[in-house]
Every structure is written in structure tokens, then in C-alpha cells.
Image (cartoon, rainbow, N blue to C red; front, top):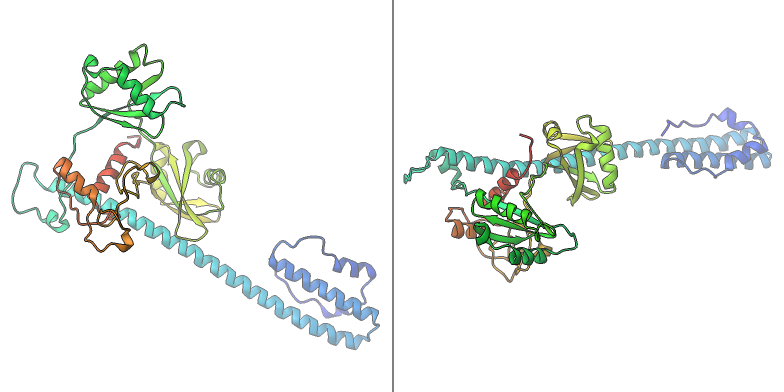
Length: 401
């Protein structure tokens, strides 16, 4: 808003012409801002007062008294309007600061998660692999957590239908009826249906994996409807905190590319947004090509419109908030709902009075004979099962190295 000042009294004492009166009373054009609205309304009020005084043939002395009172009132209105503008600017700065704080809190949570993963790796490196001493190393004693042992690598092939209308169940039936594992001499550990039109087949070894892929893709009957391939690694993802929720996916992509030199439009894809605790805000997740990922992450901030927004690498394993297991979401879950705190069915976390016990770590201990601590809730950032899932996510990400 341009700086407004009180009108000159000597100019207002001049009797206005009919054209001036009509021009001052016009209301066709909409004001650009609330402040312009005040300037327009006070100008119209003055025009009406001058017109009334002129038509009443009021003496100049009385007109001066009336107009001086009006100008004094208008000056007060202008001062209060300016004060309101300053207050609004301060509020805007406070809101920006609040967004920065929320972004830092999110960064802190992510750093805690990464720190726990590094602690596990350090503890594993500090403990001799073939030593079973009763006294643990000093560092491991401090963190009081068993390092996550290296699990055997998995050899998985995706078998996908060429017809996108084909269901995962149909793919599984077709594969199992047409291909006999004994004929291609492969050991199959597991067959898991995917969310879309395909299945994931886990083999016993790399040799078995290669034999399975060759068996599917060279079979005359199967190769016309199915295709087997090794899962491709995904590009790294970045989360942008506290974007105005009125910003569309397309607008966000355009703004990021035009305001950040290190980020070309062809180097990233805007994927989806997540809810924010801040009203009117959301977090956006983008997928970035490896060549742009490292330079972007070193900045720790990204320009968008009038703000520099906090960013972090997005490493969030897929988790079901119904059964609290990894690998699927609640809309695809057929299991019973259990409590994220104790792992038992029949109540919510808010109503739980049991000691914490995370079922994923408990199940992993039983299945793989590990030593994960289980006395924590599903939301614990230091959870060994969560750190393992994050490491798997990192292993499936193409960082261009």
C-alpha cells in the first residue's frame, strides 16, 4: 500500500465542479487491497462532504471547521491502518518462524532415526563377530542395544502381467500352472501378490533367480502374457515441509524448477503430499534423479515463492497402522487391528494400560533368532525393526553411486 497522507485543506476549500463530485463518488473499480479500500472510502466521504457544503452555500469559515474535523478523523484512520499493516507483517513473520520450528522438529525426528541406525552399525563394528564374551564393549554397553545382524540377501523377481487388467491372483495362478519349478531346477522360498497386476517370487539363490527369469521369458506360452524381471531401484525421495496447502501439484513443480538453479524440471517428479500439524500447510514428497539429489540435499532448504522451506531425505517404510506390520497399508490389510503400544487386540493405544511390546521386533526374534529389544511401542524411532526397514529402503534406492 502506498503511504497515505491527509488531504490539503486549502485545496478542499475550493468549491468542486460537478465533474469532480461525480468522479469522487464513482465505485466501479474494485480496490486492490483493504488499505486501498480505506483510502477510497475516505476519499468518497470527503467528496460527499464537499458536495453537501457547496450545495448548501456554506460560508468558507464554517467549511474550514467542518473539513478540518473530517481531515483529523481521516488522519487517525490512516495511522491506525498503518499500525494494522505493521501488526499483520509481524504476524506473518511469526507464522513463518512457527513453520521453521515445525520443520526443525521434523528434521530432529529424522536425525534421531538416522542416529539410531548409525549407533547400531557402530555397535556391530565394535563387537568382534566371533567373540561371545560376557562383557560387552563399552559403546554397546552405553547404547544397550543388540546390533542388527546381517541377514542373507534376498533374490527376488517380479512377474508382471502384460495385460494391465489382469489381477495379481490371476498372475499367480497362471504362473504356478504353467511353470514347474522342478523342470527349471529352482528353489522357491515365497510367492507374494503385489498391489497391482503381478507377483514377487523369492528364489533360493542368484542362480535360481536367473533360471526363473529365463524360464518365464523364454516359455512360448508364458512370455506372451507375463514378463519376469529384477526389481528396478527407485530414485531417492525428498520431503518438503510446510508448503501452503492451496498449492497444486503442478504449480509446486513449476515454482521449484524456476526458483532453484540446482533443480531442473526434468530431474524431479512431484509425487504426493502429507498432512501437517500446522493449519493451512502440508508436506510434499518429490522424487529426484541421483545427479540432482546430493546438491539439493546439501542446501537443506529449498526456495518456494516467498519462503525457504526445510527439506530432508524421505525414508519412510510402508507400514500398516491397523496391524502395525511393515510392507502394506491399512486399506489392504486383512489382519485384526492391534494396539501400537502392546501389540494386543481389543483396544486402542489411548486406552492401553499394558507395558510396551512391539510385535514386529518380537516376531523377528522368533523367526530369525535375533536379539531385538521388544519393550517399546510401534512409534519408537529407535526400533530395530524400523531401522532394518529403513536400511532395506536405502538398499533399494538408486543414489547413482
